[in-house]
Image (cartoon, rainbow over all chains, first blue to last red; front, side):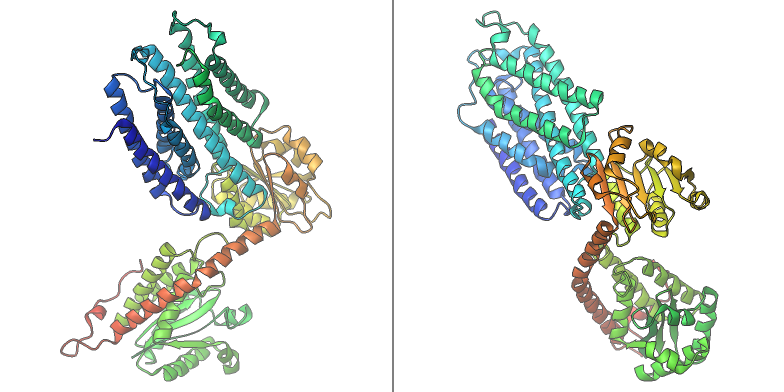
Length: 271
Length: 359
């Protein structure tokens, strides 16, 4: 019988296959039907779910207790949101752009040293802690897909601006639709992140020596939240949109993903 | 019995010749009856479109003799001189005739490669012949096969992919920019023929409101009435700009009607949604620099024609695949047709069935 990590390894391999297939789709100018790609990611998602269930049942808690589990959870939520979007044929190419991120998250999660077990096994048995972590990780998944939709927007916008026939030949959604998807995903992400963070003051960790404002992860989370709130607000207040908005959403997510593990490791509260 | 097609098309003669030999809808059935009564054809179908007039015949005569008789029939029926008709006529016999029919049905012989209108016209011609009782076992099966081959080619090759007219390319572009054309507002500046066609294409795909402006308000009103739109005085069109999603410009103005500075000012008053500017005019009406503005997309006539040309080239690249398929299916059909009766003088079972509907 495979362990939860091995199940997740299999899921990551399928995400990798998905990424290889997306190169093929890209070379074809995104004109070929992409159901194969969708089913590869669906199979990966099934294995990812199995891994999470095994981990959750074996420890009798929500599997968001360390960096391995958290990253696996972000990967799972992003693939899940994509699979729902991909039910509509015109959104299915989102997966071709997203699969490198799914693969990257999978490889990162499987790196040695990240699957550190809580010796007491009690931290996430508290439902508020679980909800706090799950909502925040869901929001990261939404931000990831939002960055993917923004990338697709930039590609399609570039084709249209340069009068490239691929703007018509490719099966990418219209730029108006892509902008709308990105806007909704970032809004959903901000709401999830806000609700997730709002649980933080009630989690109570009296034995911790540092105040919340001295914790790197807390500061980082506030910066991330404020940045995304700024992007969303400027869209509605100052008509911030189009290409600058797409670049901003990609930059925010790149910053998030590159600093996520570092701040976790630096954080006393989140160890 | 031989299968033969005799006809003329855009490949062999100009429209001035084709129009003399075109058959009106009401003339087709009597002509088919005459052909059968004259004994030159056991079965016949007459196809008459703006690009071709063709007679498909199952004849008791050999190919060359049948051609002579059909040629004389057409000459007499259309009341023209021999030297007028003969240089434009072509004929194909048996396997070539079958291949030709399959190509015509699939749009491979059309003026615009891969166009689909011809299939409908061929079905109409066949139904007309069935109605006139001028078809039999051979042509019924042959035409059914032609429709089947055309359907296969349409579904399994890229011969009909993409748009080849300026209007339909504009619609495709708009659909890549906007999330559907429902509710989109279109303005036509200058009431030209191409802009009218483009506007019609956009309206047919759901654009909700059409505004027409022209230096002559009468022409603007005429076009607006025709397309169920609203005419706007040329002096006032900029006031409508903040509502617009698509602008089609085709004036004969010697300088730009829309320059970068003007558009920069105008878009301040509109929501942050994309704006598609289609410039069909020569000389151009829209400053190409406007394309550099955020959320504004400018396409001129060269861009649209280049996309249409790319599509045509892609269709050309599919031609060999289609021709190979057609050749194999024509051979297959001919072999089945030529197969001797299995027993007691009857024909092969493939040709036992009577006429069937064009589907």
